[in-house]
Length: 265
Image (tube, rainbow, N blue to C red; front, side, top):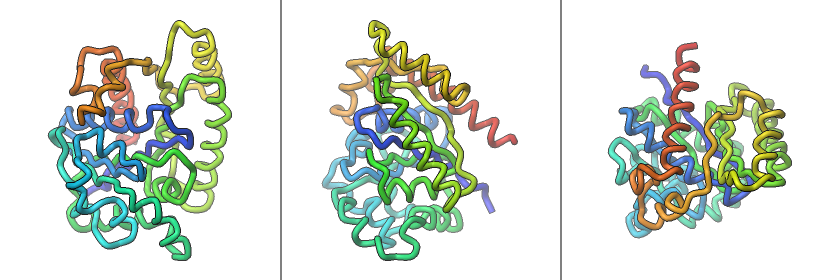
């Protein structure tokens, strides 16, 4: 049997921290070095799908269908504008999925089962990135149950550590009850403004508390990165030379190095 693809969930219960932007650009960078990558858009807002140019009318099958068991991961995945990168898109149907599966005994492991079935049937992806909703709900729990590791985008703002503490508690809970192998892949500091003393203080505080778990690369605030989703492209394709794209390429290099060390261990 082929090795299971590395599954990384990109999670933060707070919205607007660069979670989807990180998922899209990291996936693009992985595809650029020859990896076969799948994004599972598990956020009902569907921003990862839109940001990769997937029109809402073309989302015939979605992550809703995968979680409810009416479609496989392979049949729901569609190609994107990035060669080597596919996505299971999201639709607003996901808003009601928690109520539909709340009473099911396997409600937390639906996505994990779908990934295992894909491995047995075709296993054509080397990396799977899961873009979570901005909350610690049943969908996020599904993603953590299915994942090898969690990548945490963290905005350089006053309440950053408070939110991080809550997320780490959730990871510990999942590790104790559902997925003992789950690890923290890394914490990436986003939306950094070097002119802001508070932002610099947040960077220092997070590094002091979390040590080497925090990536060296810090993602700056950047207009071109904000513009890219409206053009249906990752920032790396929209404007490769802008500061945000260059930072995401550096982050991707760090992530890839960590992943290679993990695969070699």
